[in-house]
Length: 148
Image 1 (cartoon, rainbow, N blue to C red):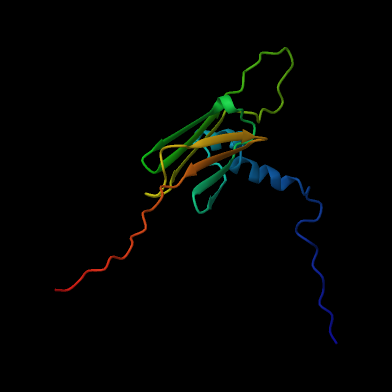
Image 2: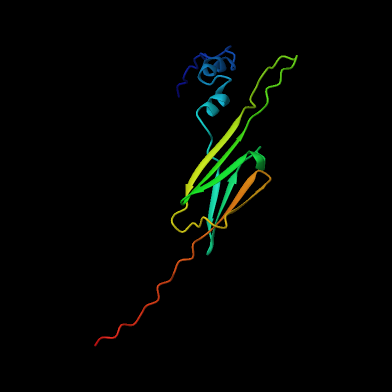
């Protein structure tokens, strides 16, 4: 049996945190801010269809009901929320700033069965629940035609 001679590691004596210096330029400290600069974030949603209503649950963390705008145009439900953080001038030096203005925007096409009347919304613990009644479909009754 022959032994393979072990070569000394090329990384011996190298600070493992040195790699952060190579990666940091790819993700600067403003990476969270750049996400907002790209535009509003689409909130995560659940859509449930029941016999007579659609239920839409949207996660809007950090918002209040005063920050939320809802509209319905035809069959399209638009959820828009925006909250601006106040810039406070303090005498202390800011080391890291990750709190920013938050915007959410989502448009959902619920189809021709969505009714424009009787829509209601409730906001509780960061979750918006929108209830949209469905148009009652007229069931076509078969008719009997006499042949003469």
